[in-house]
Length: 460
Image 1 (cartoon, rainbow, N blue to C red):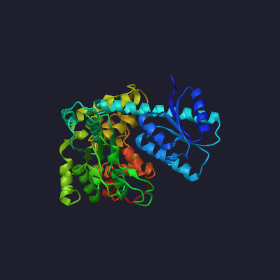
Image 2: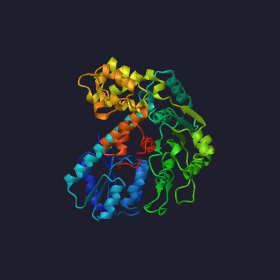
Image 3: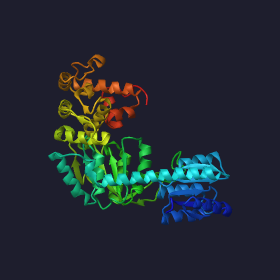
Image 4: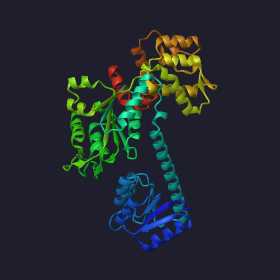
């Protein structure tokens, strides 16, 4: 059995034949061509594990071939072997995702070594994709809940997945809205196509517009080539728009066109592009309030809210806490560590403002702090819990952190502000890192900082 399929692209017959023979002797199944356009067609018909190509080719340059390839198969590693190197071409090739850039003449051993590494990377990528696909098809493994509230959500997922209707997910940050979207996709007729997601609140408007709808070459500074938007990338599949409430009025107009006309117009373009995607949007905001304030379009809301699904916060399904804890411990430790009764009592009684994401982070930290094979109350970071939970934890032997933080008698708002400040100082005011530790979205952290008048402190 061959070790992998390799495509060699070089317009010099002697070099192309030599490379092909050398790689065949290594046990690879090798196909070759001298033309860039022919190479692109071969990649559309067949799947290759590695591509070795020159830059200067007839029909289509190696850079153009690499760019086209990234649109159809972004995972295949491409090795550039060229005798016409320049700093500009090297940078462009690497920006387009080339695995390696070699200058002719290249030694046999060097090329063999690079090919072996490329094949190994491709194998790992394929395994990751297969694992992700398996997890998405069996969505219950990632969506944990035995409560009546979550059983109702699971029933809705199964019913909604059979349709192509637009879905709007309502729920606080950390409740698992993307998991619900993935579960709907995995059970739908679109499961074999792509699931594409974007957080609308995580990037500036101009970049978000380009990411969503694409752009044409020259439409703005830095637009050096045409780019497909994510709606086009998700063709035939599902597009998940998280934090859709964060979009600007201009982008809302374009989203409305996608939902009404099923077409997008790239930034700087005039010709609409038809798209076939299922849209699932999510928000943690009160859209009725935003509509009343004039910051969210009512007609877009109606288009998005065809099938609404509300995901309950963790405090409204406390019976799921032990199940979630067991799930996280199994994933983190293989079941080698459990949670003691004292610690579980604290976890079940907490309000969980950060929901499941916060619980996951707490368990991960507790696993690191635990001395033995059982997480105790002393292993929990109880300084973040409400006053009554801290008192209960103290009686179980857990440190409160009051001597260090001065949190005795503080309100929950004051406590939250202290905890935000402590976390940001620990991360050097890196807001993205702090948000990950806190178990909340960066945009949620920014809103909290605004509320406490801390948004202008520190630097990212």
